[in-house]
Image (cartoon, rainbow over all chains, first blue to last red; front, side, top):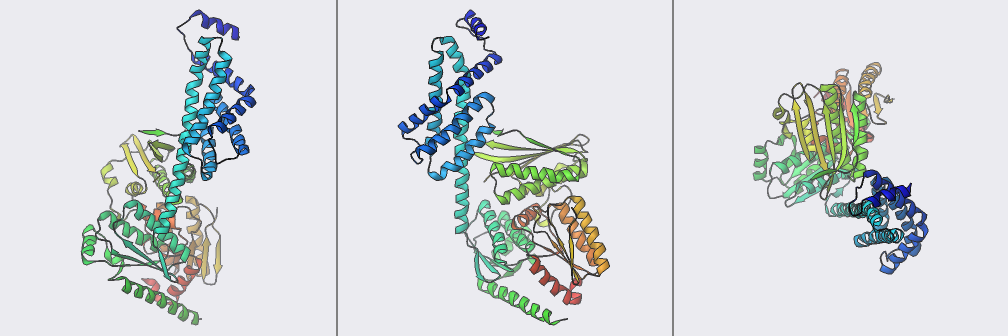
Length: 303
Length: 137
Length: 124
């Protein structure tokens, strides 16, 4: 069958009709070649990785183990044309090696090295027929480039995901949801807050209510210079969400200007407990907590 | 330019039970895409609302879920499609301030607050398509 | 999946165990109405700790449950709304209105103790 194919190509030197079937057939052929020569090509690749001093953070055994998986995945994608499995593998690999300190240029570097090692192997195999070699490369190169691209992008995305997680953790540490008494949380808000940060602060407050079993929350906005409708809505949402979790909310530090703005925006201030300053708010909170304790004691006495 | 990252997940909506299926699929897909816990709940809630609209007003339809990419941003696209009666006045349906309360009618303003983008295409007698997208921040 | 309801003195405690279909919620409403009447319960706790979302239907149904139970002389408390769920609810614009909420079962029982001991304070 190969003989016949080669004959057809020889009929049209210089101009080649490449059908989808012939590309597919070529890919199958080179996939078979890459599988047959797996051991030797993989070793060649690992040798070049060591030479280039990439993946310095990993041991030779680790590199070999990952190289085996990458090689097999690479060939599988050439065969199937589908990158989904490769994406999943690349993300998984990235998750493992990023904490080890492996960087983007290293990952891109090793995938390109593999591409080169395999390409050289194809040059060697088809060197006697330049026309066929060209057709083989026409089939191989787009697929190989797609693979390199997929691995690089997956790695970068995974890195970005990890960075986001770390940023989230840092933001949590720097957001002051303070527990000053049992069952009482204070959230002082300072400065101008963008919507994303506002959302994050609210989420943290709500988690704090659960973790501390808070019954009263004092939100102090003394440090907020002005409010627009976005901020106002956000405040109302925070109050409502806290109440859904069974906490009473007291808003303190409401200047008369801000109160005016809120009313103009249409916020129903009667829904919110407000107290002039933070100190007053804390006292009110303690009163509420003390009051509740008293009520429970009285209730216990009833039959 | 927004592109689809992998193949979409389609959930036929024929009854109330399918609402649960749609939001579980949505939660799964969003989790794989990399959304945090809070966003998973928000997305599942939005899917529940639009799926519920299908059941309530059109009786049958479809929810199509897909992970999308726009440059560096990755997100989840939720499409709710039906051949129901259509929305006579889309602008009116989208009007609702938070302070006046929600939970009535189609819940579309609420869904827009949950998601980052919302587009509605609806013709009376022909059906409705709602497309909502949320991006990973 | 039917929600199990426990009787504890004059209270009923309904503990939701998994994601509920619309049908399950309506069944819960009927079960609570029936049992509250049968046992002359003074207070009902619905524990939604496990619910992964609260959408408009769930919200409406819980409000109607509280309304029906109040007509039968029982106060209702919803407990265990999770932070993410509370957040999504307020963004969607859902409100539980007059329905009491508490952090967890313990707080819910304390709340019901207050409300039912106070007698006609529950009427407001």
